[in-house]
Length: 161
Image 1: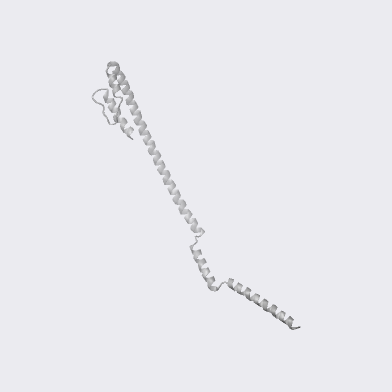
Image 2: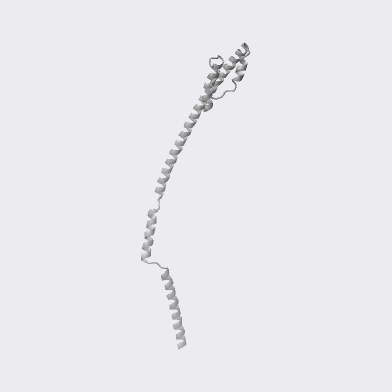
């Protein structure tokens, strides 16, 4: 072999060694050390400790479900109490209205019978149509005024509510 072939062979070997050296440098730059691996394992262990397990999530779901059921039951009870109270109020107001209607009916019959007996009593009945709350009609001893005063004392508490 001659010198030029030897030079070419040595140049080829040197180029190959230089390329391999660059590749080894790149690979070693991408590799990690044992300390890096240990630090990464510690971080993963910390993350694993902070994460919830399926059992933890199931317990939490059970507690939330119990609280939701208890709250729903309490709200339903409150609604039922309100409903019962409203029924009681409706019954009481209906009873009062019926009582007032009965008094008005008796008063109407009485005023009609008094109106037929004396011509001046119809003017008195017309003047009393303008009732003001918390007012008592004059002359409470008058036979016509007593039923009106009874109606006012019954009706006013119902109207004010």
